[in-house]
Image (cartoon, rainbow, N blue to C red; front, side, top):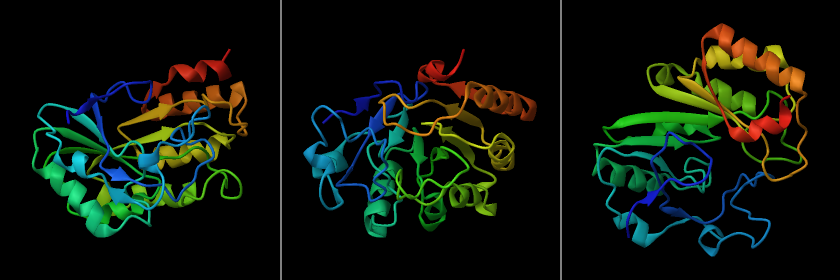
Length: 229
């Protein structure tokens, strides 16, 4: 089976996507794009977590920027460590790529042996506020921020995604991003009408100004236009 080229509007800087992990993510985020409103969740992303056998044999090539496990959270607590390491070992066989790993549980990054390749680590921080009750079962955004700032993460290339952006406190969220010092930040809005608590235009613009002040590269998603003048 060939390596899939990146499609859609997630990350235009990624060339390919590859998913070896099947089953359902325990985070159950309300806005998860795997839960398609028209035809539901694909069978391969239902049930217990598991490896998709045919995907474990895919030739990953060279010179690619590959977003690994874009349909799941590889580092969620319910994913067995042995399964995670098998996926990372597959990447090690094709070291001439850049691999992108993104998780809402970045504290688990430090537990594994990653491929000797160029690596980019990311986390999602939709807001600085508590969203545990009705929006996501993932670790709270404060704990994600602390984990991605850990000493063992200081020397790695990392990014933050604020998408879908939810109502936030400008000074607090901006200070978190300044503390993380990501290589770049992705900023986008809810594209699927999930009825999320969204910030005002004024807050969006104030955050953008703060990021510029801190010298952080901002990569705005086109869906952000809905929230801007």
